[in-house]
Image 1 (tube, helix red, strand yellow):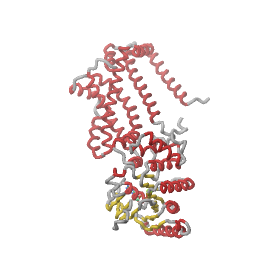
Image 2 (tube, rainbow over the protein chains, first blue to last red):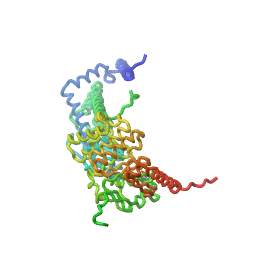
Image 3 (cartoon, rainbow over the protein chains, first blue to last red):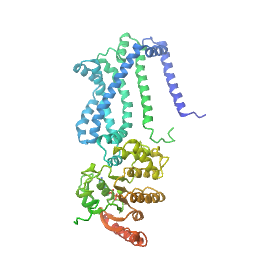
Image 4 (cartoon, protein in one colour):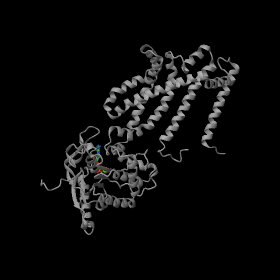
Length: 257
Length: 268
Ligand SMILES: Nc1ncnc2c1ncn2[C@@H]1O[C@H](COP(=O)(O)OP(=O)(O)O)[C@@H](O)[C@H]1O
Ligand SMILES: [Mg+2]
């Protein structure tokens, strides 16, 4: 019997998930519920967050912070990457600085942001941007560098203005790289945001996680964590759809199922 | 210079182009004190073996690279320095088609017009007309990957012609095509250039192609200098053809011995 590869993949993923859930459920019979709450409790809490507006609002608040951070890092990263790409001489000034930034843990930025700035939202935005900026810059720079010299000269032969060159050649060239950068940084940002919310946020997934810890509520902690994971999965899927539409010019081999 | 004689449209005066070697050990001369001129309305075929500097000469002419010394003059301007003076004046058909993969055939032809700020609706009408002249009606919406090599090259010819430039530069435009397709496009190319009274420089490494397309043939030796020149009029396209072809073959074969680096001695 031959199965459609997609369906087989789905069945395999479902099987391993079921095994994990079953193991958890068995653990819940032997350990106290504040350590291993039953699966149905977690599911109920997860769904409750999604259908209770004040709770859903907090998820959206965190989503907004992720989005603002990524958008800020993307704009700043592009503003850095394109001049570096055009004038390679400035690279040796900026790159070491970005590499240095990349090494600083998110928690250090939390401390720095609390000492430097007032205003919770500003602190969070700062942390989100500064932690995702280096990756965005390097990824946009890489895709800029992959620009074809042939297409560049062909376009230049029509003598375009700087803005037209940007629009007709540079944007389409770096677009695939930008979409990949968004997909990668989305996961990073979702992990950083809960740490960033420790700067004194009075709402959001990070704040709720902290509260569940104080209440010793494992089902709650897991339910809030699942919200973030779901958010990343949903947005990633949206990016894939955008990608498939924007990059529809790419040939696809019939061998690639 | 006589006042009555019209200035040539294109003039190279003692042009040299050197490239720095990547390992920093001096430089490599690709074009060596090259001088020639081209009149308005001429199709000049430039013939030479691969690596003799044809494309380098071409890039100098297109203003994409700067001469190390000497002067390139096109309609009284330096194509590298006065880069923007040539907006819409030069159309280029490159050796490979250089289509933007994210643009359809139609949008690839529209590109030049779009850069020259033509209205979208007008640009589309013009682009469609050129595509149909080159036998590509029905393929307007196709992406380059779905077109054959010959079709892609025709799209790139349409892109160059659509802006109606005064000067057309073609760098081995048909060398990657099969002979049947190349023959059709060659005839079409000459027809288009002559019809519109344009000037063209046509680079090739095929003797027959040079003789079919050119009003004049310049044969290059490495590093790009003129080793032989012939005018192709009615007589030389007919009965005199064989004589010119023999002459060109002789000139090209002369280079083989002269231009090759000495064979290194083998130490036993
Ligand atoms: N950008 C470059 N840098 C270094 N060497 C080059 C460059 N472009 C061309 N050359 C060299 O100049 C010579 C002439 O090249 P080219 O003009 O492309 O020849 P053709 O078009 O006649 O085949 C070749 O030896 C080539 O290696
Ligand atoms: Mg060449």
